[in-house]
Amino acid sequence: MLRFYNTLSRRKETFVPLQPGHVKLYTCGPSVYMAPHIGNFKTYIFEDILRRWLAYRGYRVRHVMNLTDVEIKSIWPAHGSLKRLLAITGRNARAFFSDAKTLRLLRPAIVAPASKHVPDMVRLIAKLMKRKYAYVWPGDNNVYYDISRFRNYGRLSRTPRSKFAKLERRISKDDYWQYEMGDFVLWRAKSSHARGNVWWNSPWGPGRPGWNIECSAMALKYLGPTLDIHAGGSDLVFSHHENEIAQSEGATGRKFVRYWMHCRHLLIEEQKMSKSLRNFYTLPQLVRRGYSPRAIRYLLLSRHYRERLNFTFAKARQYERDIARLEKCCALLRNYTGGMENGKVREMAAAALRAFEAAMDDDLNVPKALSAFLHMMTKVHALVERKAMSREEAEAALAAAEKMNGVLVLV
Ligand SMILES: [Zn+2]
Image (cartoon, rainbow, N blue to C red; front, side, top):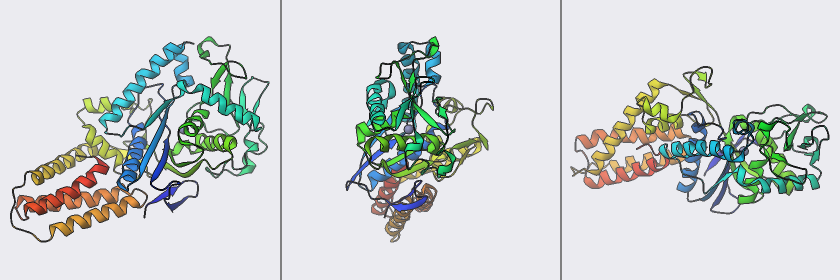
């Protein structure tokens, strides 16, 4: 029985998709104002494992991801030119997908850049205006979402209503990392500042969409009113995901997400990654330092997704050696010519696979699944070297190993 921890209920729940056999999955994509760094990929690797595990369990997954390419951090360097904006974000998006491929991440069925979906966002804001969830504030001509109108606001992040019900505050900042509470911006009116002037037309005058509206617009467009799973980093619970629920449910009147899954962030050598600490690494930088992408993937998936992970260079080196051993063991099994029937190998492989599956079914417990895989491989390695199993037994062990590796993708 497959179970996931649902942030909404703060409990592990049995996973039952809306339509049997099919999963509608939405994940928040990168903001491409800069090239991706290694910290971004902890969440994307968790989402990759989630997808692979759902597929392993026989589900057909429809995965949609947005690409934030309309954001103040990329608009400012573009100096008012959409063409320049798309050149900057296009370059960073290519770097993201190149790194994602190197880390062997499955590509979403649909990647939706915000810049190509502004009319969808305008339509969604118009719906919210019509249903009185949104209003134009004469102070700055921006359109805001009225959070006091939405009954379930604060439910995902467990914020008591008293904290915002009478808050007369508007937040026009549309940054990826936005933790203030108040009515948030849906449409930002054209600025008098030349550098901020990348804009589109709308019923409320020229301007550009706020950052939160894009995920609601993409999810509703490509997956319909209700998603099975919405995943992202835990720092998005408040305010981005809270805002996504308010926008989507405000517009449709239907439940937006059935299972919310959030991944904790990455530390580098026990410190939060930041430019000022000079511990800000990109994947190509680490590769140039001699770390293989496989060891980095291994490291990033090695802890449970709901736990923080500490990235250390010593660990990366150790995982490099582990992978080399796994690879050697697989090669030995593949080229094995045979020995005496052992009698226990088949059951050992089947037991390892059962333990692996049980761990993965339990809210993607990768550390436990990984240990079942490694434990089996160590035992098999010793037996193969001693020629203490038959060729058929080696084939059974290899088949189990390939099934497990198909999810983790280490070798
Ligand atoms: Zn999002």
